[in-house]
Length: 303
Length: 303
Image (cartoon, rainbow over all chains, first blue to last red; front, side, top):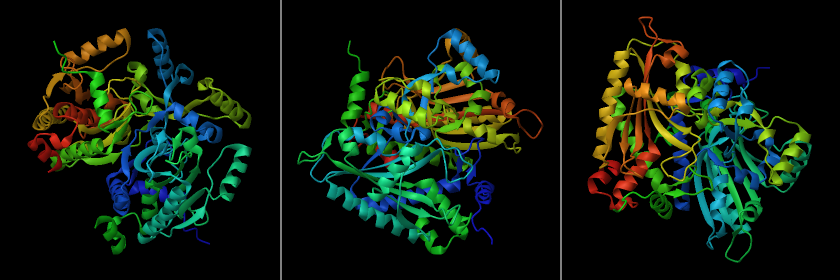
């Protein structure tokens, strides 16, 4: 039986066509001009599709306050994925020792100390602290395009350490938030299918750490708190998640003291499009040369 | 005597007008929609201005291989500015201890280990390893827009931990590289002055660490290896560097074995526009409300 999906061949094809540029560490490759063009235009389609929703637009840097990660209990669930930023706090003598270690090819990890920032693991995290207080009766709707980090080095091209997520966050009553999530689940699916991608949605769970994490994942699925849209990119049987839809209930509302006008703790939900993964799904489905893509797909992306 | 330039007032003005969003740590604020619009349009002006140059376009993530930082001797000169990424490598028991420390408000910096990636401190770094080999007779010209990191937390808004640089890199013979640098120095100055900014250029030096760093800075200035374009943003007497032009001689050519067609080690130069700083210079010079900016500036930015 021929395997239509081959991880190495797909990675090599992306490199050979100049779509990505290897950099010596897994999951941190550069993106070429054609890859970026598809990514920006797909992001533009999302903006068009949601223009009438009137979301507020923000951009956050790839780093966030370490306190945010601590307050949302990220380290309880995903310690293995975190990326904390360390720097050098010493004086002349230590600096000399550090340089000697580095240039002598020795370990130097114990010579740095933790800073007040960490890499942002989820595009929506930096915005929640700014919601503290009472949101308007219609709630809040925010969109962002941020770089996120996950420490999961892999040669599998869709599993990146650093990638961009186009995210939307809704704050309000449970009805407002869940209705909005359901609307976007259908909208996202329709958008991806209209680009010729064999996308489908499914209940999903987060990659919680360890044995207790397995129970958290089961509970998350039972409560249908997370949905994903998946597309086969490197495997037919294990399709790649390209969009994620998360209902947080009162998790962030409680942590950051966000209230609705009736005095209740606000509910939140977020959804994110994994932009690099969607671009890769397009190259996997339609081929490495956009000029050869189906006319209707080209028309939708390039107008 | 009235100080026209006031750091706190400028920061507060940016926040009050929704141009930036505080996040609890210095130099990591979010950017609002109007701020981003100006930034993207200024970046578009650079693209227009350089379109005929035919640069190859890449995008790199905010992280790069730690080996690149080690090989270019970044830690010798700027240990205090580095940002290395640490993550958790333990099993169940250590994960439990980590969570207890985090949730108990105790230090947890010693529970993580160094990964193979660091934050990218200069937009051009990730591209040099891809030049290894012999460049064409006309050399190479590359452009990128990357997020960079510097560990220098400050309440002064132009001194950010994380910001974007629109960068160009030229590889070739010394004449090719220096001629190109000189052309861009004038081009960058003209562009900024055409936007009503009181920009001027000057010989400059990098913020090398420690006592020996002072000598490196003097030598760099004597050899005129670095120029900056500066604009008053938070001080008249200490204007802010918004563009940087660096001639590396054979530094990267030697490190990454880059050659010209005559078999010589290639020379390189790079130049970068500090996008957030230029946007701030525009708000400082023309006011916090773009609708009130001079008509000729508005026309150039929004067409």
